[in-house]
Length: 109
Image 1 (cartoon, helix red, strand yellow):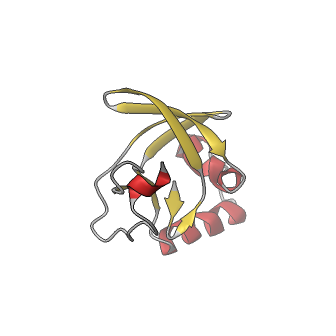
Image 2 (cartoon, rainbow, N blue to C red):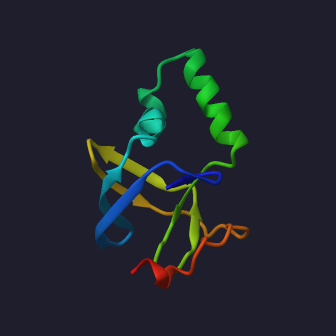
């Protein structure tokens, strides 16, 4: 998962059942900073300056996207849910101007 041009989480997807993709956070060290954002607005503390700053940063950086490593396509605004290291998500629309992969996807194997 990316925020702007920074990878904030690596997700090992192991199951798909329309419309949900299921997986596990493999590298979540950078994701932890944003975990509350994906907890849903009903879990957000009211009038929290730190959260407001985080939301502003997410907006300035263009929001989150998830890249399909098999096709290189990035999808905007993933509806991501989590429980510890387990995640499930629905991806949004493809990103029109997604930066190309540093190397072709087939070179990852």
